Image (tube, rainbow over all chains, first blue to last red; front, side, top):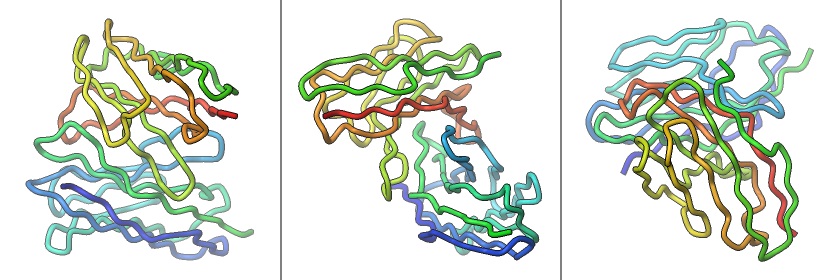
Amino acid sequence: GNSVTQMEGPVTLSEEAFLTINCTYTATGYPSLFWYVQYPGEGLQLLLKATKADDKGSNKGFEATYRKETTSFHLEKGSVQVSDSAVYFCALRGNRDDKIIFGKGTRLHILP
Amino acid sequence: NAGVTQTPKFQVLKTGQSMTLQCAQDMNHEYMSWYRQDPGMGLRLIHYSVGAGITDQGEVPNGYNVSRSTTEDFPLRLLSAAPSQTSVYFCASSKSGQAGDEQFFGPGTRLTVL
């Protein structure tokens, strides 16, 4: 079945550092890929998405590129801020399946 | 639009008690789902619905019931609460079950079972 694997946290960085959170997936067909973010005490909200190979999703300075050849969707940001501290979830939704599959989440701490 | 709303925000139950977690959305979304979030486990799908009158089981359905009598509402019932059901519960909705549709999440219900 479909699955998502993302790097375990917590990840601790200093403000203005470069961020990469790795995400790889296993799926049949051509899934859509998502990154969700969860701020403390809140529900998840969509950060970005990509629906086909080589698509790049971007939002709030974050980017991720759908790489079918490496089955990856790594999240990157060039200069993180303290306000980026949150839990980040990689997810996929199969082409012929209704369910969204989530990774286990990566907690990010940004130090001032 | 209020989006996805959940009540209550917090709840404490004793083992064996039953209760219903409420979820409503005002976006006319067809697809709704319930997840539980536990430390180190990410989100696990409990039940989902692709439209009024249609529900199906997710990854961890035991101990939970759902029904979908209207498009707007998707309540989750705990039949006989157990300490293993202590968790944060999220309801989510999306326009349809198509691959590219994002899910919109409610603020969550934090449940403690003693």
